[in-house]
Amino acid sequence: MHVLVTGSSGRIGSYLVEKLLEQGHSITGFDITPPSISDSKFRYVQGSLNESAAITEASKDVEAVIHLGALMSWDDKEAKTVFDINVNGTMNLLEAVSRQRLHRFIFASSGEVYPENSPEYLPVDENHVTNPTTYYGMTKHLGEQMVWFYARKFQIPSVVLRFSHTQDAKELLDPNSSFSGPRFFLRSKIKQQEKFGNKEVVHILKKLDTGEEKLVISRSENGVPYRMCICDKRDLVQGILLAFQKAEAIGETFGIGPDRAISFDEAVQLMHKLTGLPIVEACIPGPPVNYETSNDKARKLLGFTPLWDFNSMLEEALTVWEKNYK
Image (tube, rainbow, N blue to C red; front, side, top):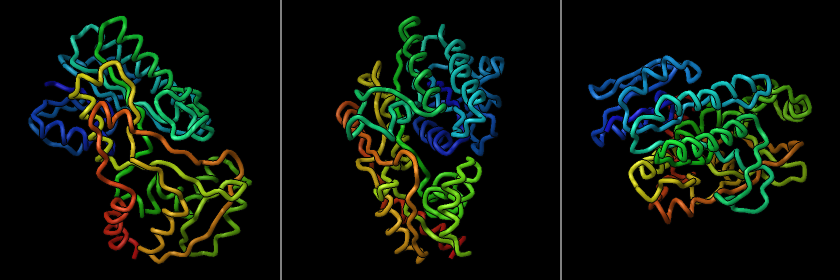
């Protein structure tokens, strides 16, 4: 099958393209960043989702679409750009393929449509009210609605996948990772909060910085450790491929993520044992990050079975740590 994958050069997209090629599909990759993939069945179109001409070129003769491409930003100053790429860009793509006979249109949404940081119940599942609290979450919520509108109007067999936070395992012990750095490493967290302009949080964190690399356990104002689902990219791609292959997926929304959330106190203790880095604890003002999402529906309808838990991801991350930072 000829499959269009947007966001094909990203951590998830590049691995997905690799797996689709292994299954014998031909791929058109669409991304603003050139790919590292070289294969006779892989075609690359460079462009942004807000460039209609590039999307039209990428969409030629495709039989299925897996729409991963998006701008991920939690900086309010970038709200307009996030909207333009994630909302207008998704509509550009839907318009480009709406009159083609598609096997499947898969839309990568996010747990941020819920809201995760103030859930009405746990674990959060697909029936939970959608009430995003970030611009990024809002754009994903609007994207879902557009997908279902085009599915009804043009009879496009569509699937919405709400992703848990996803990483390459090797990033977990990397202070320079855009995700794990600010989440688990003190100095990276300080830089992130300075960029966000959170002066109160920066003041709290800087008091803990004595000039050496440290791991940080983030807690709420009441001392409750942060907790969230962290999914391995290989498990996420497994979920995408199942949604692509199985007829049971059509017309459904699925949460794709690990079997359980990881508490940051547990995570940091495991990291400490592997790296020997000292640990500090910080009580952060504002809404706590403490939630868990369910993958039960994906397990039951798709046969989704996560294979990499946080511990096994850390084992892989250790090789990078020992090479670059020990």
